[in-house]
Amino acid sequence: MAQLRIALAQTNPAVGDLTANADKLVEWTRRAADRGAHLAVFTEMFLTGYPVEDLVLRNSFVEASIAAVEAAARRLAEEGLGEIPVVVGYVDRADRAPRVGQPKGAPLDAAALLYRGQVVARTAKHHLPNYGVFDEYRYFVRGDRLPIFRLHGVDVAIAVCEDLWQDGGPVAVAAEAGAGLLVVPNASPYEREKDDVRLELVSRRAREAGCALAYANQVGGQDELVFDGDSIVVSASGELVARAARFTEELLVTDLDLPEATYGGLGSFEVDAGDGTVITVERLELSARPLEPYDPEPPSVAGHLDDTAEVYSALVLAVRDYVAKNGFRSVILGLSGGIDSALTATIASDAIGPDRVHVVLMPSRYSSDHSLGDAQELVDRQGVNARVVPIAAMVEAFEKELSLTGLSEENLQARVRGMILMGLSNEHGHLVLTTGNKSELATGYSTLYGDSAGGFAPIKDVLKTLVWELARWRNAQAGVESEFLHGFAVPPIPENSITKEPSAELRPGQRDTDSLPEYDVLDRLLDDYVEKDMGSASLVAAGHDPDLVARVIRLVDLAEYKRRQYPPGPKITPKNFGRDRRLPITNRWRETAP
Ligand SMILES: Nc1ncnc2c1ncn2[C@@H]1O[C@H](COP(=O)(O)OP(=O)(O)OC[C@H]2O[C@@H]([n+]3cccc(C(=O)O)c3)[C@H](O)[C@@H]2O)[C@@H](O)[C@H]1O
Ligand SMILES: Nc1ncnc2c1ncn2[C@@H]1O[C@H](COP(=O)(O)OP(=O)(O)OP(=O)(O)O)[C@@H](O)[C@H]1O
Ligand SMILES: NC(=O)CC[C@H](N)C(=O)O
Image (cartoon, rainbow, N blue to C red; front, side, top):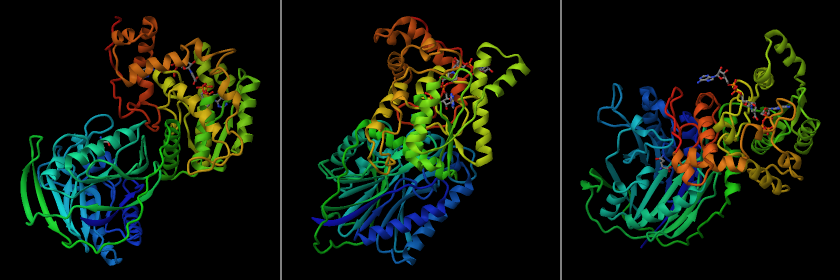
């Protein structure tokens, strides 16, 4: 057996900032070298950030990425880090013709091996994900090589992210070629409970490849995606060896005992990949002799996060990164005394600190005293910046000028509030946070250009019943201080905001249940219709009330135009409103009654 110390750089790149990402590559390689690592592995498309969407259709971007990886190799050597091999993701181009009308070769979701100032091997993702939030047939062509480099006597193969999620391809070829370690850069976005799926997958693929597997995943928020890290190292039998923490940067350093390579030859040969394609194995040698024995470090295995803590951390990280990566310093939102704006404000306080959170209390003539009181109570508990802007006179002025009544008048209140928030955003540079939850988005229960106005919507993928659960969970963490929790000594959300009946307070005595069913009934139905895509007959067969099924399906289908104009917000479920669910707005397809 041969020993090897590997370092997985679970880091947070910025999409499009090739310079900052290259700086980070050098900094984290230095940290890996300082820890005595013999190999550093970064994440998928680390140098460009992931996903870069249509940026890969720009030749200038692809050229910049290729130049960046070559410059990074040189710079590592110049800074005395040339002896540690580094695996890093970037965008390259194939010799083959592009899918779309680009003048040069089609883009590749590539990974490079950097060593002694040079890019000594290049490969690219073989299996391209093209479902859910992924569109990779639009962007990339398939990679068709598998580099295997000998490092201190161990044969190390490189695959990329989706290569683990589909059968055949690089995993099968790594087995065939007798690799001793498979390293995999990833950009695998968070959704609830995906960590369990990942561990099972990584273990299974290690057993199939017949070697240890090191899985390095990205961390951080990028528009509607949140990457949760969760980098993993497993043995050849699929046993967990090391695991990084979720939602935070970490250098996961692990000592492995790996089989010494026995294969003698170098150069390349073709292997049937078992998926109808052929992959070219390219062998190269960095160092043939195993290291002198050394004392291994104990492996690090991060503790498990429970489901609520996991969702809450995802939302906090998403808000923090959206704010920072888009150059904002502060956020603003309307605080009604209700639970949605209370939870949104709390997530914002946890993300960027209460001193950078601005709330506006905007009572109308229908606002109850307790609403204003509950909002004020949150301000006192969290110490956020607050101002009161009564809206009655502004609403009245519109009403008089335009003769608006009924629903038009109700919506006017929401629109005046939206205008106030956008005005204050323009004036002071705050990002407007939109407070709607997934149940409201599903049913269209919000006012266009009113409470749906804003730049980022932290809880748009959170059903109302989960909003309450998160609020209770957050209050139970009072006194705890962490990367995701500001150290509020008292529960940050007023109990009354959690327990009172939800109301939009757009007319006297209005309750959400005047227009919508009870949220626990609604959310179960939404879960089946939206997440699981069940048709009306299946929904009724699953026990949902037939009249309710017909009514809710209609609400959901008719609200597509509102969702299309809603700000982005973090995906936490397998099917968010956004990249996961793309329906025509102009659409006459209706689920027929069973
Ligand atoms: N297919 C389509 N494509 C593009 N635009 C379309 C459209 N269909 C209607 N529209 C436009 O949308 C307008 C109707 O939408 P909109 O103006 O929003 O108004 P609408 O959906 O009619 O009313 C808003 C609903 O949300 C509830 N609400 C409001 C505010 C807060 C809350 C809460 O608790 O959070 C609830 C309120 O009680 C009411 O039931 C139409 O007047 C038309 O201009
Ligand atoms: N009196 C108010 N002062 C400040 N903002 C308000 C007020 N009323 C509503 N808003 C803003 O409009 C959003 C929609 O609120 P509304 O009360 O209509 O419905 P909701 O979905 O029950 O939200 P919440 O639970 O936050 O009250 C709120 O989250 C808040 O941002
Ligand atoms: N970047 C990728 O290839 C990610 C796809 C993969 N199925 C995942 O969610 O982890």
